[in-house]
Length: 510
Image (cartoon, one colour):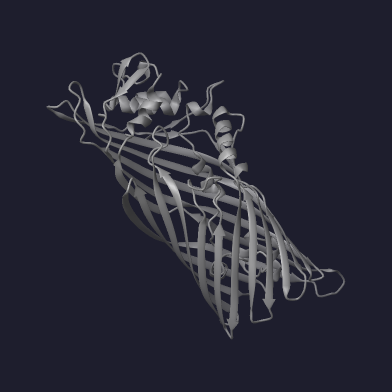
């Protein structure tokens, strides 16, 4: 497949060449999943003032000081996703499972036992985690009483000069698709219009004026299949120190990695009366594959105070993550038409990968307040409360007109949301029993676009002395809206996603 590297013309806007970026693309990186070790997940991540777990340093980097010895852990998780869709009263469901090695890390602890300094302890840790697993499959179907997906293509085509959708003598679909993206700055919208025109989904009735061959009347049967693979990963370098064994301070420097592939296939069929003349489009299939990859950077600062030997309080700051991302897109459009006598099928497969300019995403910062009560060697209870202002999410460069409009949209639609995590642990000889609760408020002011998340967890651990084995089960669910197509048609399916995760962690003192 031919790769076309799209570059900006002087004075042109990114909107002229980029695929349609939406708020959901930013939230894919701004909304965090709960991952980590089995002990961490068994208590629903309520570790901000507890520490003593390698995943806890992602919440509060001062937590590495609560290890008594050098320590390492490795974790694997089984992810199961159940998606239930409701589209105009038709309900469908899809299940997907995957297995992943999601955490590995180690910490080294240095005690100053000379008594000559009040800074009595230093911890240095290195930990890697998959902060999000994107592997997923989703299917939605139903009968749309009003809108056809032809509105997407018609929206892109109107006003576009006819010479940009018509093939010149000796020119191929691949040549024209590449030309629209590579040279004249019309880019993505023109590519969509050209494919629809060449597939006889759209036709022209004058300069810059187009009409659709989809017959009116509504009741369009539509399907949307989405398949995704990939991950967000984070490598954290941690350093922490304690003062008089009462005040614990820590910092993380984090390198982020993302690799994401989303394949979508939208189908539409109709049995409406045919046009009396010309062509009538009866079936449409529109396929897209988007590959997003890149890196990012963030830092964490944290403090934990031993108010008493039993009670600890903590506060932690997580900076924005600054991502540099790259997108690659390939497309195909298949349209079946008829003139009332003969049937035709046009397959428009440009055999081109659009490679877009690097862009930036800045996620919002986060503040976490924590408290934990330790019942000696018997157990503990812990609470974390965090706030994150999603309206500060930004695409960059901010002075670009397209990204400026999108940032303004997010500023108006998104809000400062809170997260609550509660966890507990009880020890019976070598055994540990754990449980937790988690609530994340929707990032939207009107939460119908994406609802609140509610989750529960349970866990079990056994201490062998120098090593430990932990097992956790976590369940969470959230509702959200999913568009079949990015613009022109605003109808959405209502999705309820339920995650069931089982995590196993082996840990060792060394």
